[in-house]
Length: 109
Image (cartoon, rainbow, N blue to C red; front, side, top):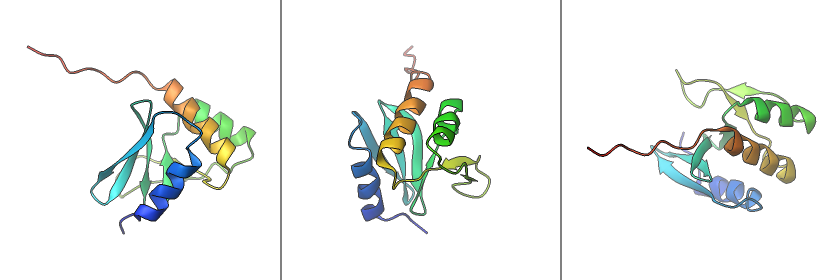
């Protein structure tokens, strides 16, 4: 089942407190970026985030359940985000982006 544009718009509105948040469509779903880094995605109208140590720590600190789900068969488990807790969600996404390495630039011959 593909994710709806309405759900993506809701997620982006919830993350509007952060700078440089965007999404790109990919095979009926959406990949979520923060400061140019892939932090998660919208899969079957669920926001799933990369399970970094900071994300897990902040989710527990905000009392969010640590539910892990797979975006699709064969994929690694990701953290199911509580999109209704706007402030906590922004903190978690910001922490994930801060924890991830900078994107590698392609080498030119």
